[in-house]
Amino acid sequence: MRVALVHDWLTGMRGGEKVLDALCELYPAAEIFTLVHVRGSVSARIESRPIHTSFVQRLPQAATAYRWYLPLFPAAIEQFDLDGFDLVISSSHCAAKSAIARGRARHISYCHSPMRYAWDQFDAYFGRERVGALANRWVYRPVLARLARWDAATAYRPHRFIANSRHVAGRIERYYNRQATTVYPPADTAFFHPAATPPESHFLIVSALVPYKRIELAIDACARARATLRIVGDGPARADLERRAGAHVEFVGRASDEQIREEYRRAAAVLLPGEEDFGIVPVEAQACGTPVVALGRGGSLETVIDGETGILVPEPTADAFAAALNRAARTRFDRGRLRANAERFSRERHLRRMQDVIEETLAAPAGQRW
Image (cartoon, rainbow, N blue to C red; front, side, top):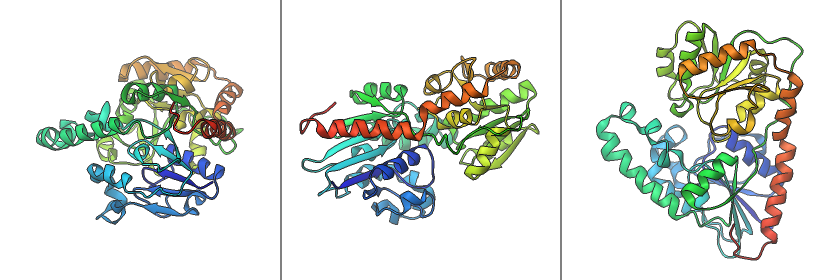
């Protein structure tokens, strides 16, 4: 059986790429199709596969500024030649789910999220304060409106949707009018595990520094709680966040997996101030025996148990998070309970569940859609 794996872009090992890596383990002979590939940015398992890129790869500064070519993504994803493949699996948070499977090939889309900026997070990416009033009204709004229409119109293409959380399954139903089977993404609970040393008193964020992560809430909350915050990660919002932060915040920048594991182990708690579709960071933190203080919305409701493995914050305000930080400091968390909760999202469970869903889809009558 010939298998094609379609992924939006390969520019780093985030949650979506970890799902792709697991798919490469399930299908060692699979070929990969992606809009843009930055060599060396993903795992050795992914890099070893035949990787086909779109015409976006050849455009100026595509490796770093590929998001500026967003209006071209529909044409780019549809130009992939998937003839001759028996199974197409798209790993999608943008355009990959709209790849066209030919003939009798089955197309299963693992959806990390319907296109955020085209649907319900436009202002977080392209609000007036970020791109200016004229660009907001005359450039980005009409472009993203067209993308939303295209995204909805092509939602029939996959035979089956798999969602990375029940929260995302609800968004798939709302925006695509399709049902989805939930299979949680894989967390490397073998690599992320507790250390014998006791944690320190500071809090931690591990995140891409982008607007929808709401990291400014954590900065302000730690200031109110007179707590120290370490921020691991980089991204386009870093300069704005550094200007906002005081002496209580340290920006670590990019870090290796080994460094991130050590950061998890040292922190009093990991903060998640934004609404996540799933959120792999809370699971990795709990696997290391570290509790999580997270906004009580989205994927956090499925990964964090309030009062047992962390604190769920009722509203996205600095005052609410500051109160939650104080509550976390007073709570005694059981490392064994934290670890057991994280094991629900292990790579082994993900692989078994994915294989079951894929085999069920292949055994169904040709043309059946879920």
